[in-house]
Image (cartoon, rainbow, N blue to C red; front, top):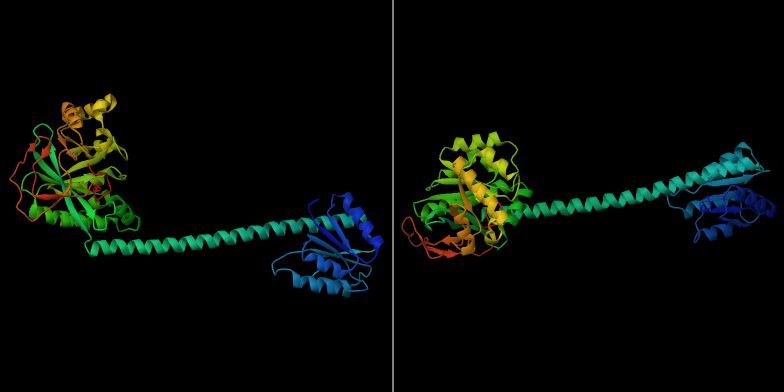
Length: 423
């Protein structure tokens, strides 16, 4: 209780000394005394008390006037308990004091136990009130901060929705295509459709933002539609076209079926490994209902439950993530893992496609491990199809570079429409 600040106001010195002794015995040592109410009121401006013991009858300014002046100094929600001292215990005096703001009475002459209990109880109430007030202030600040954060987030959502809607409606993106080749003969057997955006933003960032605001599938569908239309006009009529799809779009079979109706090449649906699948049976059923498509697991080894995806969906292709491919020639552990996956592919009838091949050493090592197909800068960069006629079917690598349709190179930072790293 030594931290409780008590003001005693009484024009009689004997009363002050008696009260101080009583309070000190029970641990109230932070006590300040005044013989005039105006002095106490002035002191309150720089030294706020936790409790005031106030005599009602004083010559210069009486306790009733002090109570009224105190109300003007306190905030509306501030609680400062006051115990009034009086020899007049009449009903009228009590009512007037309570109406003026007093909380309790000490009747002269003082009873030691009564002084101790009344002061202690009101001091504890003051501390609780101050704690509650401070907590309310903190809560009000937290609520205000939350409101500001919510408003900023709402504005960010609105801005993001406007950006993504603009991208979709104004077609501020274009498809690019990367060849998929056999690692033994270097023959182009298919293309993966990728997306780049007009403002140069990384595709994974754009698609993540679209998903966050509920427009991910709409953007995905728009990019898929553009890729199918462009490939139908300009890609060679051999091999297949691999397109990236989310589990959400796969399950929307009616919408996906309408989009794929524009395809002029056999379609492989790459289901990204970075998104969890809640219902494998539903995905299998959806793919089967499309009839004309094959499936691939993208980025195997990089995201959610790689091997479960493969076992549950039994895809036609499994794409090895670039993390398994990079410098594989120097890593026996990666080689062992890829070798095991190649054996698994042989036993289950699927094919492996290695992504991100950038060096001849990586290509040769993968080829020695019985990986049949590959993508990467070594074999052909993603490129936008030009209006010039395509090359003949079955283009073959010349040395370490792939002969491919008339295209112009795309910028290196191009990723799949679902945000996977570009091979």
